[in-house]
Amino acid sequence: MKKVLGLLMASALIMSCSKDDNNNVSKVDMSKLTVGKWYFSGTKTTVAGQSVNQPYEHACTTAKDYEMYGTNGTLTGVEYTSDCNPMTYTDTYTVNGTSITSDGSTGTIKELSSSKLLIEYQETVNGVKFTYEQTYTAN
Image (cartoon, helix red, strand yellow):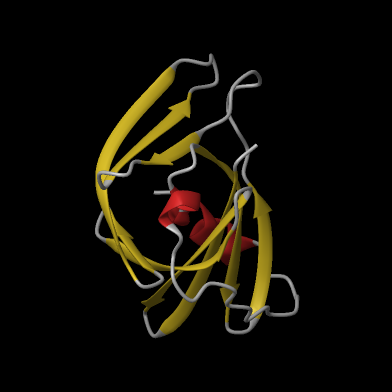
């Protein structure tokens, strides 16, 4: 989903930055994950030790795109168009330890509080490792 945008931006805008290997989560507190709406905040993409932070740009000026993790394993997301019409999608998700899987992708929950969610995804393209850290806020 959103990591494709990060991949494109990283390819064009590689900048130097320090890598943060913090892993503050040892087991996911599902009550925090299912707290309500998680608003897209931004993506940090790291390629070959170089990182770029890309703030998430909401297309609608009066509403923010978000995802909600239901207690029943259902993921519901809403993305608003530039004229603020909502486009809703649903999927399922599973959590195993700190791993979260949805839409065929598995990531690692690196940070989870009542106000912040950070999920890291990794992939290798043509032998090059890409790491995406997607940040969400609950307010």
